[in-house]
Image 1 (cartoon, rainbow, N blue to C red):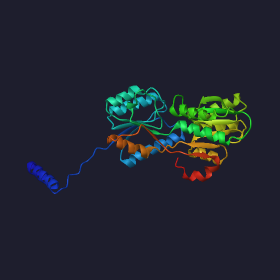
Image 2: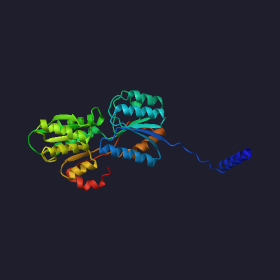
Image 3: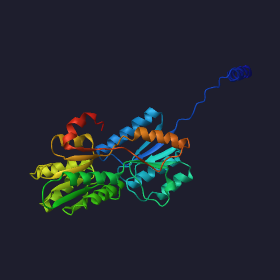
Image 4: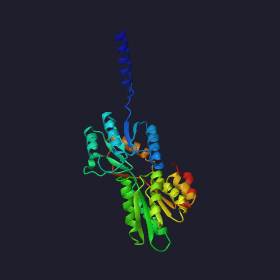
Length: 318
């Protein structure tokens, strides 16, 4: 009986092939291991959601890890992905250095690696396929350019700076781009600079300290909107008007920044687009298929001054 059933199935299969119809091939689902920085800001939350939604829409099995802003957690996650033999690894590096050892392990396992949002420093660029994200140096330049073109008050301009996470690509590059532009006018000087770790609470805390020690602050340059929003609270608590007494220039252009701009408390936000998910999933599929990629893929972004906030706000997705 069993033999006759097998013969029947073989005959059916042969019939499909003879008739020009191949039996359906069930391709294995592609698995992506993604190690996220954490959930330190509105931007990061939107970035995570974009990746999760896009993976689902693309039919990609996503193994997701939240590093809680610690490099050691990301390294553990990447090693876990290697052990699980995922098809592709992607991650947003907490800091720029210290990745070579784990990425060599991924390379030895023949698992391609994609960097998202942030770059790394390595002497061996073959350790990753491509980097998709923003040009942070250009974002810093845009912030500096807006300030030079729009700050009209006479005299020296004392700027305090809230930096992002120490050693991270956005903190290093946004500072570099901003300084590159403002040095064109000797009136503009950064008088104090400290990390706010990209969080509202730390942004508020550091701004409070700035205001206690420095009574002549004209401008705040914040490396992200969350720190700027925290700083706004500190400025108001000190009895000053943010956006008027202290001009505030920030980066990200999240909804919270637009709300602050519409309230007249934030002067400008340079866009850093977190919606990388769909583009990332396309690249993951292409990489797995062996298609060559450029080493750097930049996202398109704009600059949103206070005056445009109300009109633009309904279009914001993050």
